[in-house]
Amino acid sequence: MADITPAELRQRQQAGETPLLIDVRETWEHEEGRIPGAQNIPLNSLPEKLDDLDEWKNQEIIVHCKGGGRSASAKAFLTQQGFTNVRNLLGGYQAYTAEGK
Image (cartoon, rainbow, N blue to C red; front, side):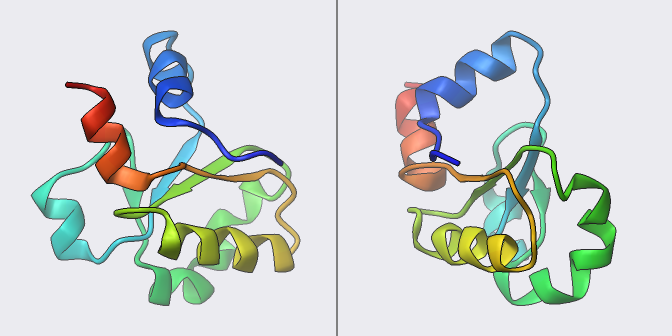
């Protein structure tokens, strides 16, 4: 599945769409600022949270981090675990917040 731009995510949020949005940054980073609706699952905690995400295996999941690196790893990991529709937020939280200014 193709990755998603901050502009596309904002448009979808404004249209009332609510895909599963996972912030793979550390908890302290998430607490400092977050994308509305994002659920915080730090990258190193993702393996132990797989059962919680099982119902999303064939549904859209958007992962993000600060700049896109950790979320690219999260996308690869989830895809390896059989998730079929994982998208990375290009540029991460930094690009999303810059887009909104």
